[in-house]
Amino acid sequence: MSQSLGTALITGASSGIGAVYADRLARRGHDLLIVARDADRLAHRAARLERDFRVNVEVLPGDLIEPDQLAAVGQRLADDSSISILINNAGMSMDGTLMTASHGRAEALIALNVLAPTLLARAAGRRFAAERKGAIINISSVMAFMPEVSDGTYSGTKAFLLNLSLGLAEQLEPLGVRIQAVLPGATRTEIWKRSGKDIDALPADSVMSAEDLVDAALVGFDKGEIVSIPPLHELGLWEGMNRSRLALAPHLANRRVADRYLIPVD
Ligand SMILES: NC(=O)c1ccc[n+]([C@@H]2O[C@H](COP(=O)([O-])OP(=O)(O)OC[C@H]3O[C@@H](n4cnc5c(N)ncnc54)[C@H](OP(=O)(O)O)[C@@H]3O)[C@@H](O)[C@H]2O)c1
Image (cartoon, rainbow, N blue to C red; front, side, top):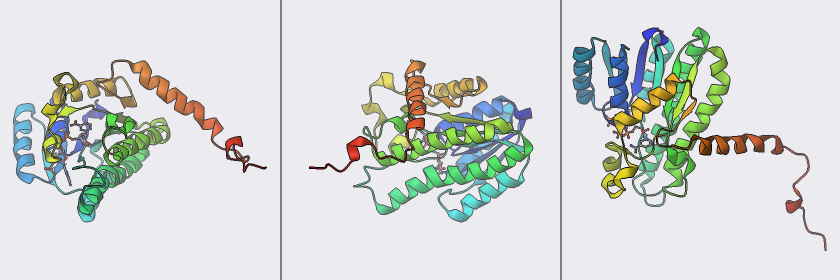
């Protein structure tokens, strides 16, 4: 990931996966623009990265659920041609299920996990396409494939990001813009505690470190992958599922109703 060592804007860089991306990209020599709500934590991280890696790290505190603050980050992406990488990482999980969560929590989940990355991808993608450069990395989840396991809502937000990434790749990769969806499995970060879940209740073998996850995702990026699933050992399973999905497409538009829906005649 060089992009002539442009600046990377990372959302949710104050902890977990985003913080590791900040570390790894600074290590690779990228200047950074880091976004999250906790300004002190961001400033502390920025000072350490600047000291350790001799790069410039600008802190952009903001709540991406707030429309005006989201718009300000989008504007920066649209205007600042030094930014050549967007990492749409900030996200939250559901506390409970859609039936038990508060109205506000459900609304925030969709605002942060769907609306914010979509509008930031739009802002960055338009400029990147015009400049024939850039990369957008969307942090989705293996939950995109498993609505039955958790709650269809969090899972749906992550399926949305996978869909968005596949669609953007079709549109923007021919224009020189790289797109990658990263699908972590269970990863040891604060998101679990923040949503009232105990990651230690999972079998230890099923939990990845954020460091391993990000290092693997960057290997996937460097290989040119559009979809990277670090915990999945059998790549053929994903490829087979994707092939089946693509095989379905030519059968999905028809003037004639399928026979099973014909009104029975007695
Ligand atoms: N950990 C896992 O098991 C796992 C698995 C699959 C996918 N993911 C995805 O990975 C991404 C990163 O999560 P993580 O696991 O690293 O969890 P995390 O440690 O809780 O990190 C979430 C980040 O998002 C920021 N954030 C939260 N709400 C925000 C808001 N309203 N506005 C701006 N920033 C906000 C947080 O910072 P502030 O609190 O300072 O705002 C923090 O930096 C998420 O999209 C998550 O869905 C995680």
